[in-house]
Length: 638
Picture 1: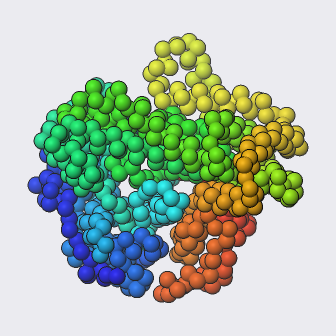
Picture 2 (picture 1 turned 90 degrees about the vertical axis):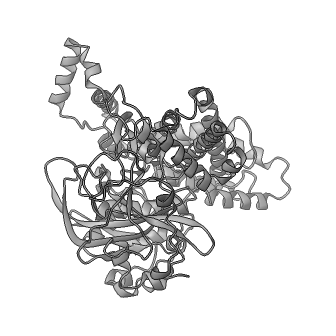
């Protein structure tokens, strides 16, 4: 293990890529450079909210270092680690389908690259440490709620087995900033907070878009428009350092080199989004500036795990047009790979990428999605009809309003049909699954109008008298269309009762379970040891279908308690998310790692079964693996 003072920094990116010559820190366009040197701004009284032991071990830092009194000073931006050289990365991006020009690290700062004792290189950065030349009108700060969400979800995704940046620490402070959370004219003061992020690199698709020309749609261009030399410099740096096998095989032919790089990035991106789909996770802002060249999940903003399954699930409350719904994520990621190819067009002809995009992406996606789905259903054999079984499961979840995570997890409770206890266990699972379906009242609340009826009526009259206004409304028209669909759905639900819904749900699930039982009988064919096969199936299923995910209500409860100065819930949730596939998790020894900040709540909590939620002065008990409580249905993330 190492110490803060002995970390081995080798800041290769700053050695090999051009740095902005301007030393002053003010908002500006930055041509001809990949980085601008900056310094973090100090915060008042930084405090360690939580840290991830496994993430910090990537840097050879153990608990003894993380319990140091100055740990929060280093990772809150008040003190520089010896050898670090803070900088902000310049990049552009397509945001919600349109080229936005220069964006860059407006709240994140590269601290440097640490080479650990195993020889692995890790770029570390702090997010929320103050303004940079790319902050535009922002102050470069992040607040406690968003920092906790990124910290917890980064680690949750890693322990789910999904490629991601890591989050090492979450630090808050007594420095305050003003934020209007829902952009509704009700600003509040919030604590400045900082998260330490760790990855091989934070280069993204948008890094290469700094050389793009003027967009016909937006009139914006990259700050290094047409700079082919810079594009090649960035590509060679990324390929040589992060795809060395491609560099070794193709460095003699630059066009082949760049094509193979693009192809591998496309494959990794496809496999990544397949993993997202299999756990019901939505990114929320799949812009090109939020897509990693490593095929890992980056930039956790308004993300969300599905509770009740909905194919058009939107986790970002500000995504009015529904561009980034759950079911659209694969196509959006493919579109982003196309934009990456366009950014490389000066050195990689479109004739090499355009004819191959769909095949490369679709094959990688289907391979990843299909193999993971078979594991989720416990299907050891592969037959073509499995696709229909999976699709019908999703259709039944949608129809009954069933919980995504719990519906999958409970399937491992069903043994093979020839098992002696099949009937009883089958009935137990079916009864449980019916409790995971939404109620009639929840369904009606879901489709309640969100738009003022008078406003909607005005839009309808306007569209009838002037059909051309539809194109002028743009994304706003999509929101209106969705509202009309909600109204139609609400009319159909008026007579629905919990009793009638339960009857319908039971029938729907019985129909699907008939298909599943028939399919499981095929697994038994040729089997000489039924118990062993059952055991193998259950093991695979329970290592693929998580019990614990970062549901919005769990994150919100951790945030609410942390904003009152109690960080114990953040730490408990982290421990839970580090063991997402376990039936139970021991949370009683957390005080060992946080000896200096033990709270009464740490002493009181000894199990992982439930927690208490303070919702509008009403405290209610919730389990970490349950459907969301009623108070959580109104949570919005922007």
